[in-house]
Length: 214
Image 1 (tube, helix red, strand yellow):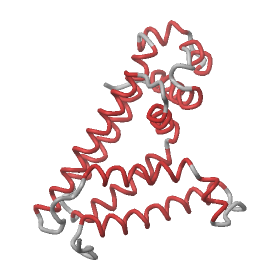
Image 2 (cartoon, one colour):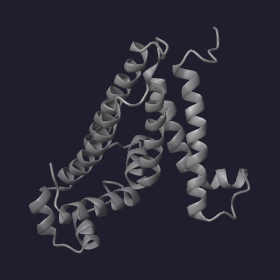
Image 3 (cartoon, one colour):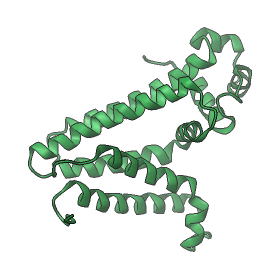
């Protein structure tokens, strides 16, 4: 579905409030006030708060899927290049839109989960896993990736590492003596370090190079 500028504004405001206050702690009136629109406009466009968060997840899921499908169809790249681009894409997406991923983390860590959000999170994870599996299959068919790759652990390593780094930025600054660095410089530094670390790790995981014999 294509959203107009006003709908996108409402979705983005809702995303920020859901990240800050949680889904249950955010009212439609809160969203309307922050977006400077009438409650009736939100009802007209989305119908309810549940439909609004559904629109948010659909928007982010479609963006993620579009990027991965474009990557899969690029015949000029070898499989390992695609893995590296995937890693950078996920780093940019998670660090560039921390509000959405705060919503996901808040929901997954909460003792009182909202069923509708949990369902969307599961759907998003399954879609990403399906597309990652296709990328891995391409490398296996070409004979450059090893067999029996644990996709669950690959996904956990990729998303878990980035999410943990985002959540513990102050700690990372402290242990690496980076507290005097500007926020903009630190974000670039952290992206670069995550990229280097994950690319090295994934190369040893998916290829036959540096394989540890069991």
